[in-house]
Length: 376
Image (cartoon, rainbow, N blue to C red; front, side):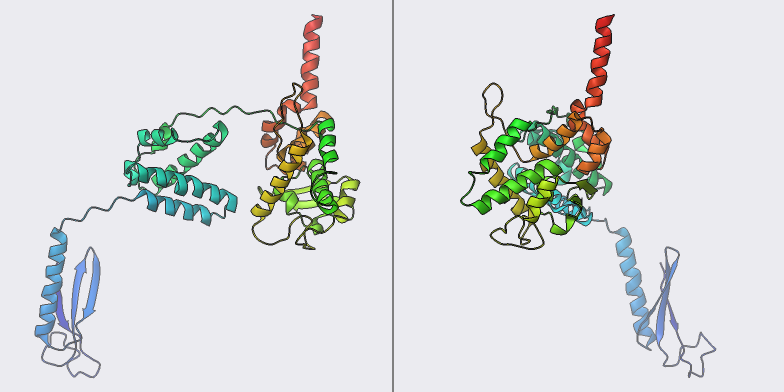
């Protein structure tokens, strides 16, 4: 590369039409071409010697950079990759609960495990390393399966950013997680739960509030977060609930049992009343309010002492009210598609996954097939 020196005459210079004239006081400029692009630079000096020295320095710097061996790029650390991954997921406007789960997996578990085993760089995370980490998991089958899907998503993100050449998590063997049939409360068990609300808590206000929540969960099919954060404005004068599910954002509109609607309208105020909500004070994170009500329901289940037919204790949880709502409808012959709409599922496949065995039409069809076989 050659840097050319020339004098750029001012408008008032008498020699401005002669670009080769050098004996004036106009500023000297530099010009050169690099990779097909032209560059110009003022020297801020009228002295030719100063400009020539600057030109030689630019040429020397170019020659040195052209012969210098480029420094290899520093490999990305696992910590840096995790930080960028979580920032990307945050930018996707995922639910706070989802982002919190990702932080638990990658910040609290994966990073700590890698630090304990002296695995620092992303390039060092191989399939055997992931297999060793997976062997330390204490989650159940279903939770482990979901965690592995998130781990694959993380390494897919890393591969797309070209931080790694191969996707090490693709080699992880499939985790088998058997899907349990949805458990629900038959009418006698639900009546037993409602009965013990009469002896729950310290006063009648607590008893009335938890009884109202139980009735709402059973007759609306709402998930507990949607029920706890339900706004009063969502209950219409025609006893219809209109809301969007917190988890999926799917709109839900369903008729509510008039007795339940009346109980909601007359529910006594809680410790920190908020006229906007039935069960929530509106302060803090909804997750904390949901956790408080979950603990209250667990105490209620302990009082109810519900057992299986063989006398063993039945494991009860709040989501079983949602299952009760769905299964009772399906037993009565309501089509699966209608139940999916009432539940606010984004796809009927989700409803089928949990409740296919309870579809009355399917059971009746199978029964007719069996009866036909018997008659042959």
